[in-house]
Length: 112
Image (tube, rainbow, N blue to C red; front, side):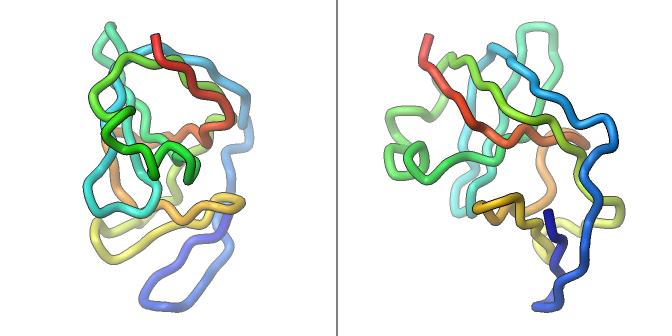
């Protein structure tokens, strides 16, 4: 994962306790964002999502739908300024900030 600001890249640290997570909730996709989405769980928690291109190309199909997502759980690097910075997670650029301090790199997604 890399962290970028105004065109310069720096290394960011993935969470030391990175683990695979699977959650169920209602997904929203950020308009105009690169790959950022969010999932709101029934218990009120929210996770940011690094979404695959296949989901973004079918934005209307996925927007505001109940889904189950799975993938590695990571944390946003400290010091992100909304609108000015993004992070690269594997093959995805994700703009900060979202609804939480953590982000799921979505490897699996299913409509419910």
